[in-house]
Image (cartoon, rainbow, N blue to C red; front, side):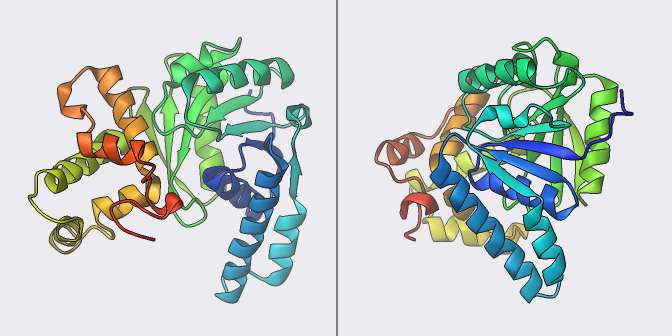
Length: 285
């Protein structure tokens, strides 16, 4: 099946991750169809991509001509039907299993049978997404890191039925994007969040129990463990609601009490203190 050349890529969801993924594909010569149900989200995404590419030009990492060419390869649409002829799909919608499953069912009916349907999920089971289609062998996880244009890692998740052929196509695609692909098995949280979220959760417990202030905890991890940013700064950047959702997936999926979300995290999310995006988390923005 690998003889199907990938030229047109469909990206679904114009949020932070979706627009970053769309940008990277457009930068590397792919025609990109970015789809979102909300036109304002698409307008914001195009604006964000223009600014991001503009910064690459200012820093001398890209020519103005290449920037214009990349923007020319990006098309936005509010209708899912616009993706009927794409060669590859990356889904980057809300982190909710039922919503994703419904979308994968629609994509299965809409796209050519050989097209790989990938999900940028950070913790939801690829196997259950594949089971919503008639092509589970062509469904896999493609978990990009935020900010997508700058971070080189892509976690590729093999579902129970994902074929070797589909996985090798995704590996090649990552390399064409200048990314480093790493394969992970389809268990809750995969590799990145399986290791990261318990650390963030433990940092929140340390604050709740008065072991240290957010500043102290972050300073220890930056200076003592050489992390580029502390776990609480990172949690604010990711979104405390997203951290809570992933911890719930780990806790429910693995059934181990060590993944129990910290009560302080639950309380902050209930209060709408979600981090950077709401202006208030462990820090004020």
